[in-house]
Length: 111
Image (cartoon, rainbow, N blue to C red; front, side, top):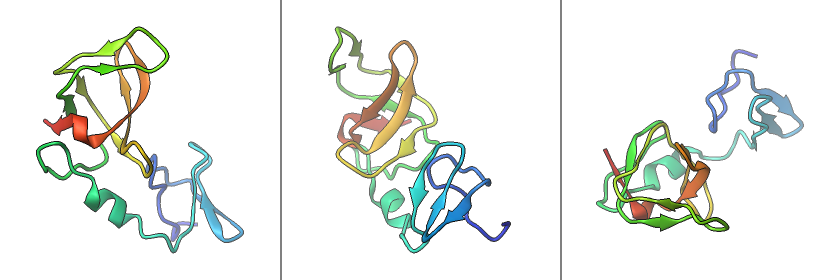
């Protein structure tokens, strides 16, 4: 099992094969070992064109309303330990006082 790659989502070393996919038991992420995960991380840039990577610290550059609540993420809010994801929103993170959020990279800058 030591020759299997770590999970691209949570970096867990406990991955295992399940058919043609690899599975992470900690975060339940499934991926194909033939997927090119490097393209995702190399392509996500912040509002100023800086390359973002998993684990970076970012700062919000615009007030963002939280959908479904009256909360607002204020300008200058720092977010630590981001995860890059594929989809409409580029960043998965946890913001103090708000909780788990998905952000678009166009509204953040790298600190």
